[in-house]
Length: 425
Image: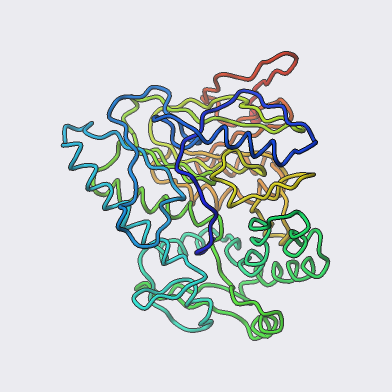
């Protein structure tokens, strides 16, 4: 979200099996629930990828205190120091250096709000349409990923620049200035931007080789942007963290660091530990009416890349991506590439892959439209062809596509019982 962010505490959440939330004071009570989850213990990777069996060597790696502005507060990085016989102190120092460098560089490259003298950011590209720029490796790699996938998500940047104002609102009435579902003028603008975004002749990123890029914008779109005071044509928005996480994983693996896991606070996970010794788990939450539950845990060993879409927050660290009104559903960060409007077909969807060459960005670019528009058998099969599995929750039914998935701790309290079934038998 550019240089804007709400405070995100670096605490790992405990889980709470069942919280009843009355409709009265819903926002206050849900925030209280979130804060309860915000106090944690070592061994958790911030509520997304928790260690089921932990060892003393696991430590949180943080960005160096002397580092410049960075994205470190968006991630939680755990590493099992000394596992391969190396000095834990030396490893921690080296890991902090790698982590800090990536977090600082990513903050600058993906920034849509600020220009830098020594590096081309998305801000510079957005303010120089049809000009050639030389970008650094991370941004070029991310743009290449998007281009190869055919996704048009990043071209919704103008709409997101407006819509993100929802998440910084202090009162419910303020959201109407940023939400197209409440504001007819914004609805028309968001719809028009989506039409431009879907058309490569209107806006597209040309990759010219040697890290050179050109943001191609048609004259019609430039005139529209000027008339409507739009300055951002391309923005990775909340999806940025998937690309940053994958790039960080590449850097770590490339330097022999494979005994750790990293989570972003908005639902992306990379577990680098391919030994198959430690057992990990991913908690599946569900929101039914005014009740939040941990419906089950997906247990696994080995490498894993995972994307978790949710239209409601679980931890206080996610509040920079959500807004909780006094009445009604939470505002989530997702905009449809088809309509340009917020919303989703599901409350929660988890997509994951254990394949070595499939990362969070690959999963995101392949699965996002399904989460927004609805899951179909063909969608599931297309993902499986890409070695991506999924888990979704519909009522108290958990649907999965991986016949070998291990779902443990299925919720069963009083008259509420969650069951699991393969949606592609």
